[in-house]
Length: 318
Length: 277
Image 1 (cartoon, rainbow over the protein chains, first blue to last red):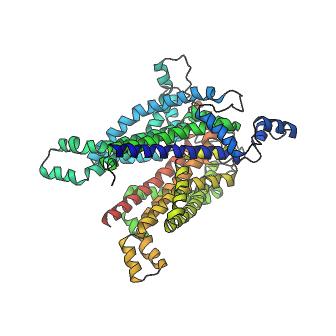
Image 2 (image 1 turned 90 degrees about the vertical axis):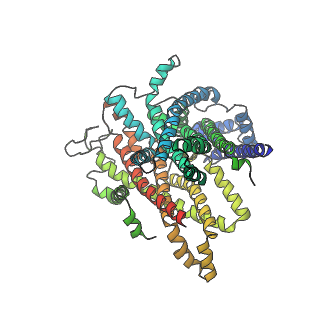
Image 3 (image 1 turned 180 degrees about the vertical axis):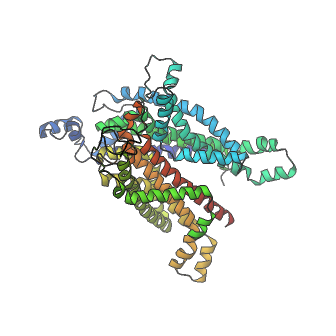
């Protein structure tokens, strides 16, 4: 299938181009600074000599293209420079935080994905019945609510009133797996509630679409049993769109994590970025932004590739 | 399709949503005049519980009246989101239509630029810009309107491309109708539910984004009251068993749910229409 390979190659190339454009965007952001990085580092009261010294040290006199290239080639090999606030290399600060965020997001995904697919499938099959209408209303509410409302509501009920889970999700490195899970129960549940709604609605739409296809009507008219229609005719054709939906929502999860981490004071990437923003630690903000963007763009690319692989029509474009 | 016809077709749940939207609109318009106390001055002890005499919703972390701050906040949060949506809608729609009409090279460049901005998560982009530029009101409004505008651009462009090739538009052109007549009599009635729904979606998007930024301390700056910032201010109260942050957060949730109830109905109408057409 050389066509398929070419199609995927094309999508990969597009993804890489997007990432390149995004990296330019992140870099240009700092060029918008009123004044420059040296003044941010030293603050308002700096003497002109000190500013000039820092400027020379950071090569701020060089043209923007050259500085972009230096920064970008560093990012490619995982060198993000040093944090302004702590002076430490950003990689050593970032990696444990990224790990924590991925742990939280993965836990939420493990609960949310099967739940959303099951609910979406059932409400598509029982379309317009009570179950469908109830889940539709419930998921509409879940989608509309901001993460911090769901988060604080869960804290109020499960941490303050019932005392089942901690309100603040601190995890010590020495904690066992079970202890860690207990600590992140509430943030994981918040993320689950936020993403399940989206995923479930999109799954339902995908299955409804498949069920309205002429070949399903044909199977019904032939007198094929309902069970066979669903499992032999409908589901294999819905797997592509559903997989696409799942990967798209994983991208959602990684970004939604920022607000949830702040609510639960969880030491992840989101909290790190928000702290960096309040300290105006520009290199660290850039690093966080680019890591979030890589994850987001990468997962979106994966979603497209999954749907290319799953859809025979896309495998053989005209 | 006219407004009255839309209204008559609404199920009760959509009517409930619409009623709540109108209530919030009223509070946003007149909130500061209804508020019994000023928004920024401590008027009692801190963290009085709900139902305290004279302070029906209690007081906040600095002893300011919760109800008054919610009312002032309604105007600021909803008003700003509305300004941002109107800005992004007008600019995004005009640019989208122009790109579709111009076609070719201009369209390609504009669409690719918008693609790049849309491939970047909105909250992260906003954090990036605000951390560099500092969070002032004009920067906040322009940044969010720009982010929102890229989404409107894409929709408006798609709608314009679609409509141009529709049979009833072709027919009207052949009849020799003028372009304004076509826009008013053929295109607008067909696009109305879709446009209203999109306006609701974009409003929720910028309303939630501005609330999230304020919650993170990068949106509207204290002591001005806004709902996202009030959640942040009162977050500590929850550890003492007071549901204080849930009040503003609940207002945000209720408003977005109400808007989405109406949007859901409008989208349903739009899709039924396109299926028939």
